[in-house]
Amino acid sequence: MENFDIRKDLEDGLKNREFQVYLQPKFDCRTEKMVGAESLIRRVKDGNLIMPNAFIPLYEQADLIAYIDNFVLEEVCKLLQKWQQSGKYCYVSVNESAKHLSNKNHGMEVMKILNRYQVSPQLIELEVTESAIIQDMELAKKAEERMHELGFIISMDDFGVGYSSFSVLKNIPIDVLKIDKIFLEGLLNRRRFQIILESIIDMAHKLKMVTVMEGVETKEEVEYLKEIGCDVLQGYYFDKPLPIEDFEKKYLF
Ligand code: C2E
Ligand code: CA
Ligand code: CA
Image (cartoon, rainbow, N blue to C red; front, top):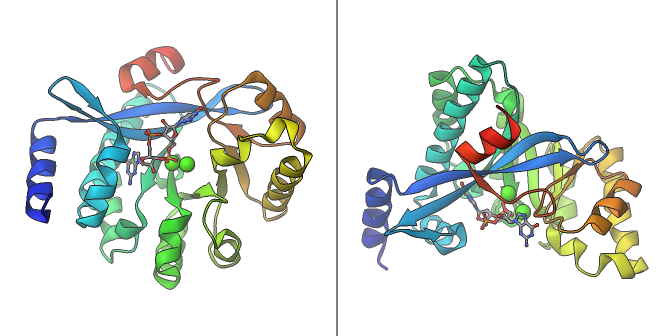
């Protein structure tokens, strides 16, 4: 598709309310209590559910990703306001494309949305992917510092799959290390893999970061992650991403 068609397609989708936010719960590793959720976008077009990998990269290439990220943030802020009014507290993470994060209007845009719903940044975690952070380290560093100072929780998503994970850690104030699910592959029967994961978690704790393991699918993985002191778990073992109403019914109300 040409950029023009991609923009038209995105505008149509927003206008026709085809985009929907799903929430996948996250759990405290020790107590297995729900502690927060990640927002993940879906599109329902002509009755079909379309997953984000089919459209996020297109919008990123066409420089339109800010529309999606702002849409998701606004939906999340509406929810946080509603929950707060009913005395429910739960932090929610949103995925932020680094392309959007590095935009000079980013901080202002984000705060405008939060102010509209009187939501505190402390309830929002920004998940930024490492590959995206790398593209322009200086710009990303400034943007993350700015968001960190505003009070947002900063999370490095997909940790460990890029080439420069460790150099990013050296330079950017990160609160949460979200370890990529690839580290779970073959983990339980390869001591070599375990040593690497244990070292990552140990390092994160020494740097005062909270560790999150994504893609947890089995009881055995949960037991092992408990043993090595991972803080937060997310994955199909606990629950899949749910439509907002289902999430609320199951976990909040
Ligand atoms: P991600 O941020 O790494 O999200 C985790 C993906 O793993 C999600 O896929 C989630 O549904 C899936 N997942 C959760 N538990 C398990 C599990 O136990 N096993 C396995 N195999 N997978 C699991 P999803 O929802 O298809 O999202 C794909 C990617 O699209 C996300 O990866 C994120 O990079 C991007 N994305 C989604 N929503 C947004 C958004 O609002 N804005 C931006 N910029 N990107 C988004
Ligand atoms: Ca994520
Ligand atoms: Ca991830």
